[in-house]
Length: 223
Image (cartoon, rainbow, N blue to C red):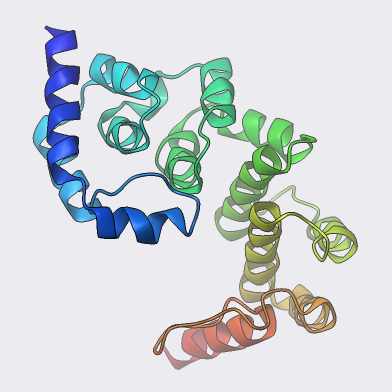
């Protein structure tokens, strides 16, 4: 029964494959061509199915793994399972969804944050930074924000892309959420110039930290 379900889901994902979407995704390191709205609709129809989610994950197919993330039970995974899953995630979209939709809702999230934050693999470390940003924003008690700024100041400029992006997000949120560290966060952003020239679509806010912090704080003050 479960094998039949996996085959049916894989067949539907194959039908949804669009070469143009794949071409765009591959520029960002993602190897699938399924429209995410259609993928979400498929997952919504399947509803929560932990066993099917695990089997879809094991296929190694990126689109199947995204569906798996959407239909799984986040709290059902053990710490070591999530560690292995993250290290095998491969693509940015799978890692991003795994961290945001599963790990953040799992009781082992803080334990994994600490382990991944210090991991020598920059892709794994980027997940640790993403979880740290969540704490910066929602539960900063016990975090050494000044210490995080020290690390960002020393390491972000030369960090690999995915780790650099995650550190930049953390820097931005420290500046946005914590007024006492705002001036230093902006200063670090100005000096390091990370993502200063990042192409930003009209109507969107640049990820360059001095611009991003200023815009978000102004928006908060206008509410």
